[in-house]
Image: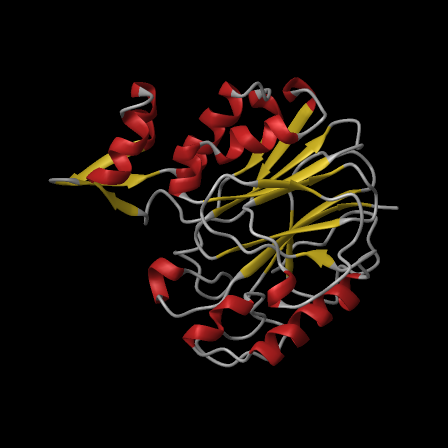
Length: 269
């Protein structure tokens, strides 16, 4: 069953969402959408697909726009989310106001966003990659990052922490649903991308067969966040697996052609 949006939200029962399981400051919201229970996308994107770039795989962009509109209305969001054109990079944008334009052509290229403005909604799309929400413990700033293995290796989380005005020691983090360590197998290129730079990262890998390992994205993210100055006791989440739960989550590794969940973060105005 989906968790409520947040303790102080009147919209918990309206849409299938998973709330961030952290002790954020009052007025700070973070959640990830679930795939079933709302929306109208057809298989294999059923039902609540938020990814408009899956149109190349066959989903209807008009239906995705409807799903997004339902999300905004059903949650009573204070403004339209800032959707990004994610490219598995390390670009971070700061938003000081809600988006002026909408549609796929208006989405800026970046893999993370930050804001200090209440009412500005940040959005990250995933289907196995790790969504990470950061928040100042005083509730005055938030960030959201898309961190697959490539982004983690290249410093996506460090770049997001550095883009925030809040010192790292004043941040807390929530690790949203991603490919879990029991299912996510990778090759030598991914192993080397982490271990060649940080020998201690080998603890996040378990050898399965020659040249292959199971990888714990959550452990790698925690390691990177702590190295960036975030208190390890302020990092929450990281117990789920998108690959293992087809009834709740989209998974590119599992299904190839599939939709995307949205992880949203905002501060109440």
